[in-house]
Image (cartoon, rainbow, N blue to C red; front, side, top):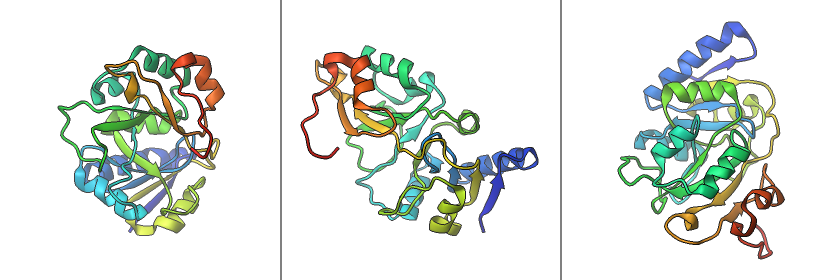
Length: 225
């Protein structure tokens, strides 16, 4: 049986966060508000919890979830290297709607799915979630919806789709933007002179990325991203 807490109500906020932390520690799933859309969250270092997340969404291992972090320090613990251009992107767009794919730290023992040695990392611009991550550690998070359905921008939308597969729902009202994060592949910058490729354009526009990256941004080749 799942529980829903209205985090705009001080009387529900602390109990909600406590139950969310406990659920993550037990390997269960929670739904959290972010600055983009609502997300389903699991302990990134629990393979069983990550698999539970994929199953809840009806998603395969070939679509591994991104990982939410509380800041640059946690980013550096998860990735093999942070190139100078990525440092500039982090300074410009974090916290916010930019997900960055980099080679994962090879010493980490985790299983997010078929990542091919990479991890997609984002720092959300939502105080409630950042405080939660400080307590739980990195969270594997994917948009709160069934695969093929629109991402939830309200907690009730997520509950309608995901039901009791989620232990705790944290409701913080409508999503700030309702626009999914932009995803970029920065693996080409590690140990080489490659460029940054836009995998999905969302909350951060290609033009804004270009202002920070200049020639390091791979030109748009047309078609869908």
